[in-house]
Image (cartoon, rainbow, N blue to C red; front, side, top):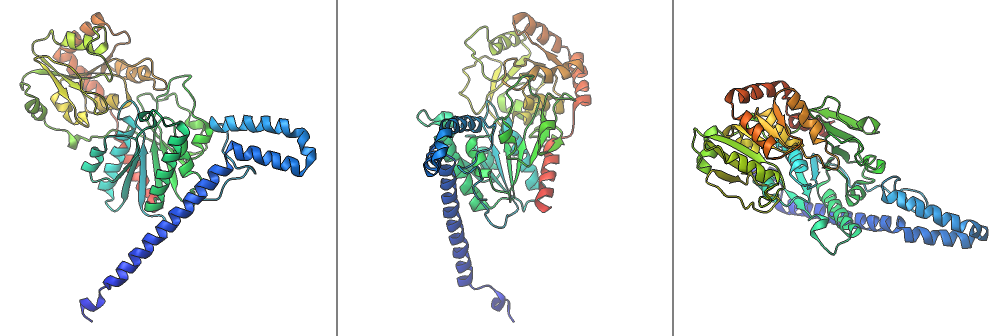
Length: 462
């Protein structure tokens, strides 16, 4: 029989494709109906009406109706706060939302915080998965606006703007949109795994993954948390099967994973770049017109007002400008507005990730965030750190003090002209920079992105 005889008829392929498409449309319609039914039966209005109906069916229940209404209000508040699972009027869960046979697909959901932390961790993991196993389908669903970064890697993405972008959309309305869009992504792609990275899970997201027992649900949740920080509602945590806990600088981070019912997978700090990703020392200097023999300081302090002479960024740039052989490269976030900074030896770097240019820098001045800290430690960049002492959950001071104790970093709790001037003067000494660089070696660990990628692939094939 010839090869032409063995080929599949085009008509049959077309028919199968139409059948699959029709099945997905039917499934999407069924699941939309199930979600609408769930929202109806879990609404306080419906539950209140059930109380009245049952009371009129059995009049003796009218005596207890006021107490039943108070209990309903109390339980509704607990559910809204995530202290109690959401149930229907009968105290039961609404049916499972099975989508059929799962594929070797992973849906990643990073939220957008004040920076790139959540996005970068999942992006780093996704890139390594595609290297280890190109057959795994990687899908992103995110509120981050920087979709071109995913597109450059050929990663498909679903995007919904964050709720704060809209002035006239309530939290409940936004969560409904989130639930609908994420549910449709599940129906279309039939993922085996769902991976979330964020501080607080959205209620719409939790509704979308609720009842989908065929999908492994994983939360990447890094430390270190401040003592007394806002605790995560137990109902949010109970939606997940596995908590991936990237280690931090502290051996014993202020974390509460030991209280979780979910399995905990520990890994080393997750960062985006590897040594192979780093550009040469000449690359960025040539691009920005910086002499090869100049000292270059990288400054990344997050939000700051250059026009405020007392701001951290203003003080820092002013002190660096006093050294005629020092060029300053200020990292500008893609999430913020362009910085109005000028000067003959000041350059702006709006790139992602900036860590690929670390070979071009002689030292850095950074905040104490997770990504920045572990990047300078991993790539041996001597640094001065201004930890943010007013974060809601992240204990930046505890994180960077570990490096200071090891001699790898200078930490300023009180940022003013005098302390900044002394620190810069100290790090200008080449021998001190070399000592700091050597000290980072003892703090550096493997990249947790490789470990998590391998773990997720193993789960797909289990």
